[in-house]
View 1 (cartoon, rainbow, N blue to C red):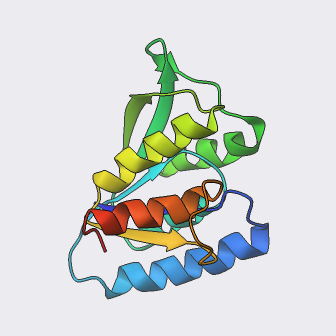
View 2 (cartoon, rainbow, N blue to C red):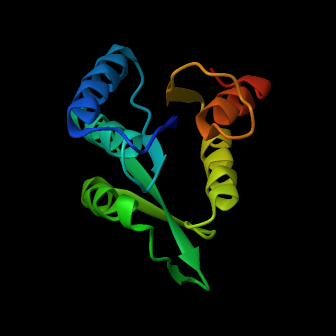
Length: 145
């Protein structure tokens, strides 16, 4: 699987630019690996669109609480709704989507399931507040490019 992580607070024009760049990267890959992303706004939406535009399968990870889909924070709802319509497969994972640490832990599971990670990130160091920097370090520590 190919995984994407990155910021959720992208503007609509930034989502379009990121989508185009991700699509370009996906088109250059010779295999037909599926894309895997956690439901949410920003980079997940750009990646989901790029994966489907590249003709690849999209797998979306959806949070659950007490064995039913969890209510996502407001900023993530429309992005998650779009991703669910694009997805060929939805996987459920128990975590609280309103809890930052739980989201980062879920993203670590997503990254660990990937063979390649695309990170939309400003390159800032991992200081405990930037989840994307943490996930890049997490992937690198496991030898995931």
